[in-house]
Image 1 (cartoon, helix red, strand yellow):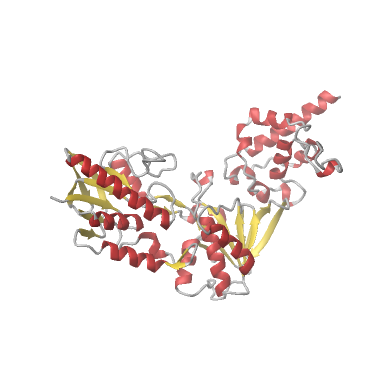
Image 2 (cartoon, chains in turn cyan, orange):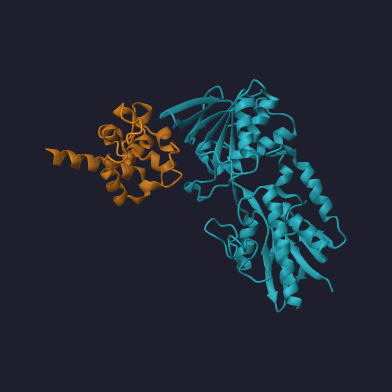
Length: 342
Length: 114
């Protein structure tokens, strides 16, 4: 009889896990709490560093899970996971009780809700938007202010909800820097006369071709980089966003009026994942993400034998890393199933 | 050669070996969060005093850490102790206590000098 695996979460990681497990002769049930699979990638327009259309990744993943051994249930939340002797029972929000030999948790991340940094005015001022909002504008091909005008001075605030003790997230989300650079380039491509300013504490470009993209932004698109964390934003009578930051490299406070401000929202452990952590007694770390048994060689293993992790439910990751992490989870699952049957 | 080209202008160099970092040590001993600063400048951007006069806590604290105390000894008293900097610091540095301790250290130094 084929081994049964339940994969919780149908984003990039969950789809990759489901597809690879099916190829390796498992019967897979993929549970997704929203109406469709694909997760956050669906909300993104272009992916860094090569500005690939995110739909290419979605197409790849959708083809992967189109497999006779995969059953997909959307609009399905997980209430709890219980171990019964040699197998697991997963109870879902719609009353299903599903059995499996192993579980992969791939509940992903939530984007930081920018209104929690109230001093930046998201949800208060008209033209303060999040990085995710800007992606939607790119997709709809209209970067416009709320009054319909085209912005000419745009600020990108790095580290919104990351590296910030005041919101309880001390870790670096690590993708926002390169996202800011990618988005700055995209803005100038669409509005060539626009001036874009990135406000940063540190520029973290630790990925393949990230540093090159950073230089391209300076060299070919004239993106400005100002080293300082924005402290607060207010709006003047003309709807300009008056932004306060210290230009730390000249050592003086800097005031700049902007048409639009883009907040580079960080990544947080998904609330749905936190619920599962509580009900299934899975360990989480200081930063609330699932805590794997070892950071080096056990990054897919949970504290419960037979339950595995894949993707950004363990830490912020880009698509490349998420897919690699998901494939690694598949190896651990297969090992576990083989050891069990021997 | 041991001077390595650093001899010409005193004002253009930080002599880390010769400088007195006892004030920074005193602040750190009494307020360990002093070391957590990453120089983001959020405190200086939001600073009530800094908008009127040359007062940047980010700048002053790094000068203290380098032992460039002469540049700090008067400026540190320009703070109004309003505490806005504490509200914005992403690293949770107790900035107001850092300033209070720096002021205390400079006052003590002055007394001992007399």
